[in-house]
Length: 387
Ligand SMILES: Nc1ncnc2c1ncn2[C@@H]1O[C@H](COP(=O)(O)OP(=O)(O)O)[C@@H](O)[C@H]1O
Image (tube, rainbow, N blue to C red; front, side, top):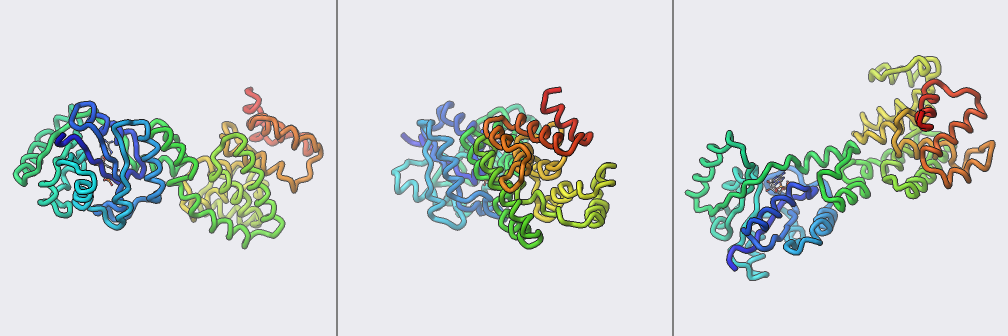
């Protein structure tokens, strides 16, 4: 059947609910019976390539559409490598799959740039274009019509699908992932799981080796060995409590990065970069080492992951509202196997407790050893106990 296949090309870095919605509309409105998703190796109109590796983008896409009988994924552009020219792709698809004239599925933002596509005049003879536009956007309507007339004069065969706008973009998802914010509302769950598991777009796996090397170089041997044990303990805890591993690893290896700085150096760093210093930290500057390490991760390594930064900043005194990554670091720092605990049963108890109970047990142990908790830590304890 002519024009029953739509080719949907894009970077899919990553695939999101907006992409899925337009493909679904194209099928449910009867324009095509199937959609072939084609992740680009490299979009020729963008300065930089995709951030996620080809294999991962492909894997996310495959998992996201595997239950949609009208969908299939092709890796021809990734296999071809280099700039992904749609003309080459269409020619190859037509010859390999005996496709009649296919549709090419496009978002509205891409429509205006069509005349600049490689081999434009040949491309428009080989496929028709299905363009998704925002319904109800009357301001843009006259501009749209002008553009359509221009394209039609060039021989472009074009159909519009009006859809309710889906306000989501891959850029937004990458930014949210970088900050460690929730993305489950914006992408299929399998895609979100993959992004979280691989720490995609966070920059964490990329900077981790440098930070680890710096920790080894700048810390005493003893302290570096402690950091490594905290990391291992934290990874076990993270696995047991289903907390993402990469942010935990980074927080653990970096938490004491500046622990051996002198009080003067900590105070002058905090002053230089305008960090808010509490009275307690002013009186005992070593308490600033978490805050300074978190600031350094952000400033020198571009880490924006909010949970990692908070976990590192507050690993010594704890914090009301601490999330799971913070709790894992807090517990691992106290209970790593190199620490001598007065009550050996604590380690055993931590095996079975949930993360909030574990933090509370650590605080109770600290109180029995060192006396009253500091005011901030008391607030943390009361919060953990639901008070
Ligand atoms: N929220 C959205 N609603 C409708 N179309 C979209 C949306 N997001 C992206 N698109 C369209 O999906 C296609 C693929 O987008 P993308 O993966 O960002 O790849 P690229 O920008 O590299 O082409 C483009 O044609 C784009 O216009």
